Image 1 (cartoon, one colour):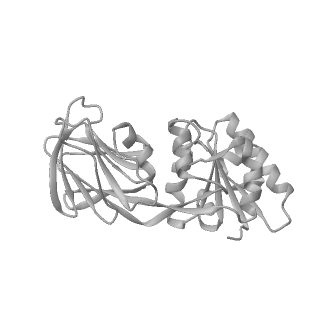
Image 2 (image 1 turned 90 degrees about the horizontal axis):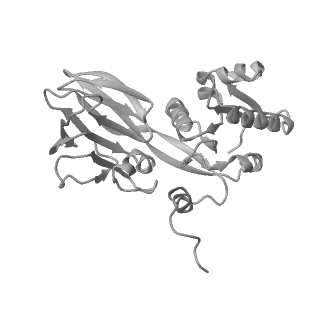
Length: 292
């Protein structure tokens, strides 16, 4: 992939991110042979004193060949959801805590970006969910989710009841704190803490993970990523619906949350030597180094 335009996106109001972003911007400008355009998300560019590099998210989405995200997984999730419809590939530089998706360490940033420009990175296509809320036969909310869609009891402090259907077929009525519908990418996020399965990104599946169900027989289940999931709130239960933990909708009794694979996907770019299993070992502190 030939790169002509790079967008830099960082978590606002973070001194560490600001330092890394300015360092990277200076590096890219120094190696610029006149063929590379570098933009910075507008609000960040103005705050950092580089207004000449400012570009709106709309401009970044339409014209960027790649977006480099500096921050944690939350920053990358936000960028991915906003850029998904334009299929802008993402590179993640970790300035957060875990960094399941932002897999380049700050110390390796400049070397890694040089290798990106040399065409040495590999593509990793990730499933994206299309999520809708339906009320009285009308769609009242729609968004994307890269990690998960979570229906939960919100501030009520009591269990809710959800009728769960897969491809229109009745599965069960769940009495619980809620339900997580997770992609393989999101299987290492909230779903993992609820004892859901870890799905390799290449697995064509979606995980349904009950939250604190009121019966021990409700177990997580993985279904085809071609399936549609309908979660209907049974009267009189209202609920909060969260999308990647970044946006939410207050659903009412009788509403249906409809979740299916999106026609769009998210492309992550990984440096040479990237290994999903090595990432899991590091982030989840599994065992020690392999014996030889």
